[in-house]
Amino acid sequence: MFNKDRFIVDCRAAVADGQTAVREVLAAALTEPARIIAEFGEPEQAGISPIYRAPNLTIINFVWAPCMTLLPHNHHMFAVIGIYTGREDNIFWRRTPDGIEAAGAKSLGTGDIGTLGRDIIHSVLNPIGKMTCAIHVYGGDFFDPPVERSEWDHETLQERPWNIDRTKRQFQLAQARFAAVHES
Image (cartoon, rainbow, N blue to C red; front, top):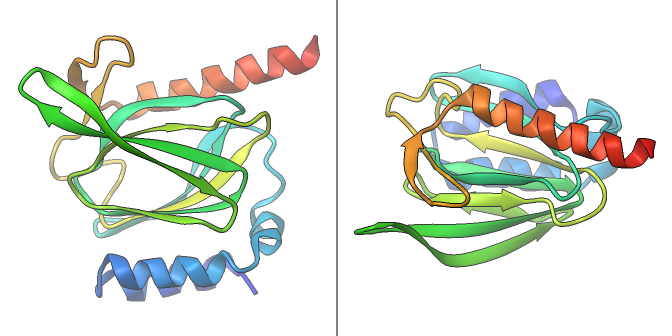
């Protein structure tokens, strides 16, 4: 049975053993997606909700608005992503002499787990007409990483420093678009 506090304790213990150990903890949690929703509540609004934060571990509950996209970005730390409702499509990018180019993709649905190495660049899309919810576990401080992160403009694919406030604003704008459509 999923319990947020127990999950945090288990992730804190697993992070010392690396990404594979964290993946196992998340896989066990995803066996009961309804229990995760009961613990976190029904998703009502897109956003980034920190669950735990330390220099070696960050756990976040992400809620993606319908049809929301997030710019290509990197983390400079491993990530383990577990979907507990909805779908998340990832496009993977690689650096080129002129910037970045698409190099692959992976779709994750309810119960699926994605693992990203520390050097991965990806963008994210919720391609469906309902909220997608995911637990993301990072092997470092997501909000204040020791190495500056980057993001790339959707249109030009030009690199710039990653900015958490800009990222949060993308979630707010996606939520506003979703709300406007459902109010009409």
